[in-house]
Image 1 (tube, one colour):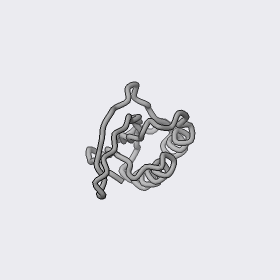
Image 2 (image 1 turned 120 degrees about the horizontal axis):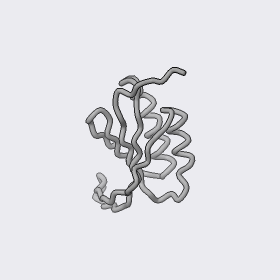
Image 3 (image 1 turned 45 degrees about the vertical axis):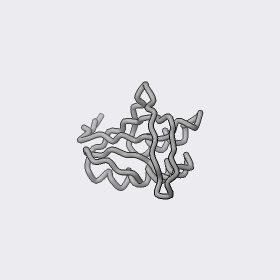
Image 4 (image 1 turned 120 degrees about the vertical axis):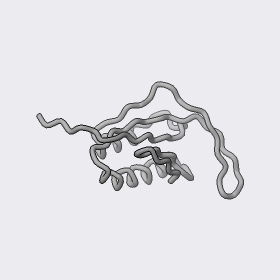
Length: 101
């Protein structure tokens, strides 16, 4: 059996508004082979460009990546998560860089 070693991790933060995140979790497994759902949700808020403020509870997924080239898969996952949660933006931390996509 060949086991790949992760070179880094992604933190994907999504709103905890969906009671059954199975489709998102299946997409993570299909793209990256697995995930860790951190045990506690976070609570936060943000303001969009129109000045509307949002507050929500957040699920935090840790996803191991084998190579920096996995960034393309990350973009596809972010687009899926935005559509799945009907979010204006998705918060991702990748290789120490935070992006709001």
